[in-house]
Image (tube, rainbow over all chains, first blue to last red; front, top):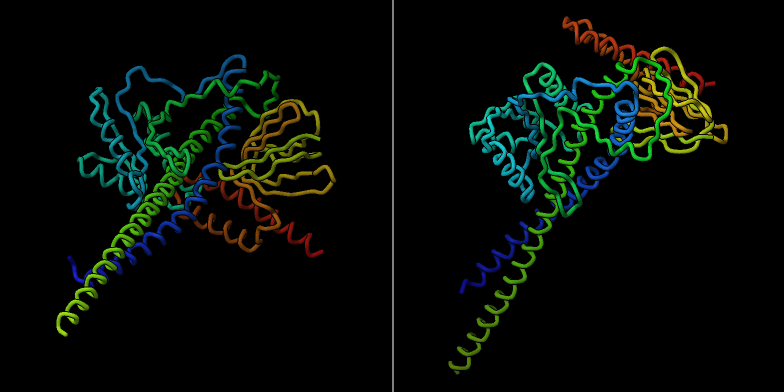
Length: 284
Length: 138
């Protein structure tokens, strides 16, 4: 059995680790709150935007087409926006999304995959498997603003229109709740506008102040920007939630170890006292 | 009376029943009142004026966006919205000067086109901030 002093030192070190994980849990919790509300606040804008676009696309006569919706017959180059975090200590947040990405890369379906990484962990994982990266957005902050994400959507838009990319997907952790976040792959380009949002909307005889094509063009641009922004927000909210949960787990584990060690310590102390009394009694 | 919703990609700005809305379009201004015909338009940089049901007014600055009117439901999708009273005139001047400095350094045609738009937007912002400050002094 370890000596009393050894046990005492261990208890102390576990306790100080617990203090750190507790502090990290608090920090992650406050960041999580902000990121979650930011992710939720963005949703109405996207919904309204989709409604207006769907209106223009499906209820107009003749139907409008847009170049960002063009489906290519031969899909050769596929782009993936790969969202991870910059820092670790967030449970399975990064490992599960990296596994998903590697699965996609391992599939052999005669296409060339091109990766755009957001977050340091993802870039490092791509470096390890020797995959080239088209662009890297490591400096995305904890509190991304709309303007911060415009660079990402600009790259995919330009490359899609110039034919360098035929399809673009985003690989990210979708935020469901504080407890659950799931890795997901969502198609960004060519854009697909859901017809479902039209339910409840009715055809009306719109006045268009500008050319329909001009309005649609700008709406589509904005739609793509907003999609990318929304995915970044989801990923950030998931990251902080995952970190908070794993830090809470770590604090709980530390607490368990401390109580276990304290029991040991008390047992050892009792044994020592008993031994000393026996020695005194035997000596007299 | 009709329902107005102003949202940006980052937050919901306004949601409620109002009497009249005046919004800036690229070709001028457009006023919306109850039972307006369905309409879709782009918005230019400028002031959004909201007249509420109790006749009080609120003025906001927007850099641009879209407006949809349908059956007494008005949706305003804005890129950026700021409360005019909260814009500092000095800061607005600074921002405009900075953009103009950048303009002098840039030679790329596409970049210049974008900067030109940004400067026009910032000039509008500056002017509105000054007007708001001036009217407050009185």
